Amino acid sequence: MAETLSLLEESWGVMPGHGKGLRGPLLTVIMRTPAEPKWDTEAMHAALQAGSGLAAEEIDRCLQGGFGPDAFLQLVLAMETLGHTSVMQPGVLLAEASRRQGWVQYPVLVPTFNRRYTRDVIEWLVLVANLRGGEKLPAAAQAKLDASRRDLRTELGQGGVNTMRIARACHELDLPLRWLTGNYLQVGSGCHGHIFQSTMTERTPAVGTKLARSKYHTAAVLAQHGLPVPRHVRAATADAAVRAAHELGYPVVVKPDDRDGGDGVHAGLRTNAQVRQCHAHALSLSNAVLVEKHVDGNDYRITVHDGRVVKAIGRRAGGVDGDGVRTVAELVQAALAAAPASRDRATLVSLDDEARELLALRGMTAASVPPAGEFVALRRRANMSTGGTAHDVMEQMHPDNAQLAVRAAQALRLDLAGVDLIIPDIAVSWTECTAGICEVNSQPQISTEFAPQVYRDLLLSRVQPPARLRAVLVLDDGGAPLADGFVTAIAARLESEGEQVVAVRSDGNWLGRERLSLPGREPASAAWSAELEPRATAVVAALTPAQMLKKGVPWLHVDEVHVRADARNTDAMRLKLALALLAPHVRGEIRMPQGFSLP
Image 1 (cartoon, rainbow, N blue to C red):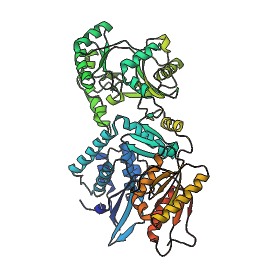
Image 2: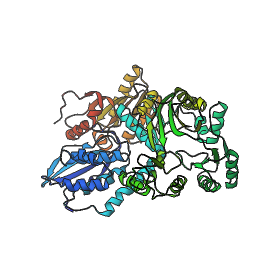
Image 3: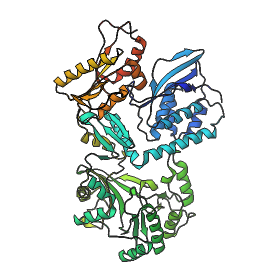
Image 4: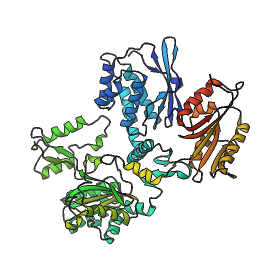
């Protein structure tokens, strides 16, 4: 494989702050190409289709202007988007490209969420860019990328999808975002900041979350409110589960009491053997297992936020649609083949024991050919994690059913809830048919499908304008004592204007006369930690140009910049690079020393 595009390994770095208008953290690396590179875009296109997981249309979009650094960075962004990370901006040049001995070097900044994943994507794309003719990527390179994707999905977890969508909404709304730990993040800064953990917020009551965690206790509370819930019985053993099934009457549902996402839920059970088998599975996931009377009807998820319904979807269990030509087995294989390479195979239907049982109940086998238009369910439950599909029902939903969901959320005192309702027809009032609330989720996966503004609305209801600290940065090469005096003077001026100011100095962070932290912290870290102070309305900090070029801009938005420099002692080129990194984040004035000019 000829090397046309390469990376200077010694140039890899991490800039934890922001820069060039990009949200941090950022990877830094130098890309190198010949002065007149020759790319084989056909070979690239074939490799991208085979291993990237990107749709052909997306690949065409990235390569429509030919291949080069810009197209490369667009492909990195496309694969970040495919991985459901919070990266929403393509990388940019950190400085002008330079020519050396027939090669061109491009220092670039690349936004990242998971540093290993971003680096593995970049290195994989470098191999793709160097393909020629009929060459194929080494199997080890594809295996490395696939492993990185699996690890990313594990890191994101179930609640991580919501977290990524919140991060994307922050970008759309230009809100500050600070990752705290795991899936915990702060939106907004200072006194305007709010902590989120997935879709749970500071307003989500712990007691409501704990109630919703237990399906048994949820049903007990809802029943006392007069809301429709299925009858259910706790069953510690398989024998107890069978007795409960006979008491309730088949068909029944067996499920763990405290699992989310439909994990371990088995619906429509009709035999003792099925109950025993499903009880064993549910018991492997939870110490508490419920047997519940099955409610006939369609499955709906109604999302309630602050006392109003913001989304309602109908959910259909995983299965296949007949075409009158192919067998069930062939339809399943076609669905698997059509799925993107990045799709988690666990979320797709397959011909397992559950599927064969459901086929047998219909008098069918995997070799049967369903008539055109006939849906064949291969799963008992309608969760998206098991191959289910969704459709929007907001317009069809009867007002009584919307109010029922609102009442269920209010009964548990939840500000945000996903209410799962089983009812024959969402357009018919629950008071006129048999219906049941089978679950209330205090941390629902909302998705922007059918409700593209839902995460924006969630953020705007919590994070009120101005949403961030008033930030003043001193860019100073003069040393800590002089910078500290300047920071103190600016802090005093802001305090006289009514601000509660965090002053970041070499002797620690201060809020007025209260010491917030001890000295000795790295200056950039001390500066961005001010965003977490819940009493603060403003921050002042000083950084040197060298510190900024290494760590990045500490805040996404900067209101004032004061440059302290003199012609004799300042590295003018380094200051120029630091200002170029900073300038897109400045919302106010950059004040230069009188008579000082940059080259």
